[in-house]
Length: 158
Picture (tube, rainbow, N blue to C red):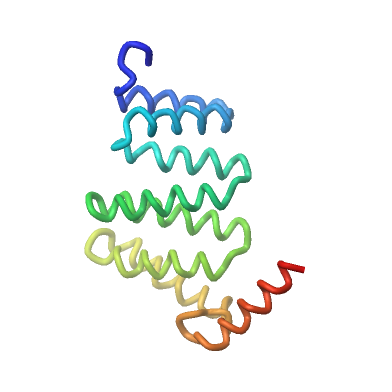
């Protein structure tokens, strides 16, 4: 890295190596440095997101992944779909069904022309999650979900 701090593949390789070694903090540091040295290296964002997720910094990880998804939609829909699927898995792991549902709805909207099998899976998971989320679904029940969100927010504050 001292020879060429702008070599994106070297940064990505080093960050991936650190992540595979189980050193999420060092992997995050490498991906962060990659983005500082090569701001256009969009592929470093998911690596940093995964590292932050592993470190328990979920909000930052979600922001990184969402940012990467938005950037990917302009250049590579398959990359965006893969990132959305990973983000949905994160939400499932921590029990955030409404957020997971939002991811699968977006996948269902984007996948048909790109990946038919993923589109079919997304439709099935969307249907199942709509049942699970029920009245908390802001798309199907906007007024009720707003009330539910206010109640949950007030409980969090107390």
